[in-house]
Length: 274
Image 1 (cartoon, one colour):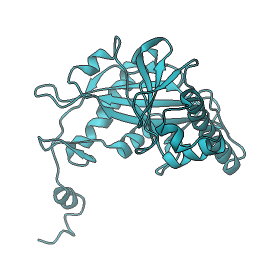
Image 2 (cartoon, one colour):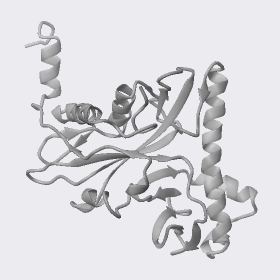
Image 3 (cartoon, helix red, strand yellow):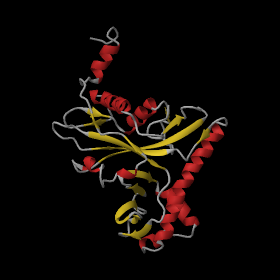
Image 4 (cartoon, one colour):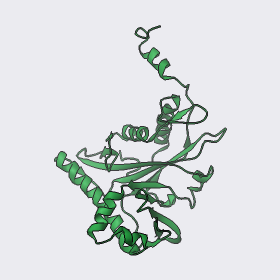
């Protein structure tokens, strides 16, 4: 069977699996905690959820690809998933993703790696502060990210000579979720996008801290922000309706909250000292 988010949209049953898996972390075991005492899945939890549901493996470390998934027909072909998650600021913004809304992904936050490539090209931090060479810098940023994917492929195939990491079908998956709302909780939705960026992005500075790339399909809308001198974050805002594939929106169920002590007593009642 083909792989959801990589080759097709997930089915209703697959979205239900995702909803139930995310909801298990509301029992007190999740990495993040809401004001009502419930917990929820954090970024590491989300990586493990996708790995299990898609039949793959979470890398459990800082890799370019967070999850590796084998092809359903040929286990020697592997697809990489770079997973992102982001709370959308406005309560109703997740509904907007059906129309003109955009997802938010932080692709990287490594200024040293970007500046290493920019320096090789003869570009300095003073160029950035002076708001020079916007287009040249933008193109180098995109090529640098592409090179990371190629390096990840080479490293994987060197370690696994019988397998091939297919970059053409590897993806970004971003999980967007709304703020907590009484009576609704949080709404979640996953979208997958190709690793490649659109062509003909126009670059300009919006300040001496941020280089911006405008969406070539709508030049009034921001597609990329790079904060070259203040953290190095490379942020990507594609329109949700340009995703390769997406899930339906889902909310989380509310299991009984189990404390760490209660869980330990349940697992090992004969060992827990009274």
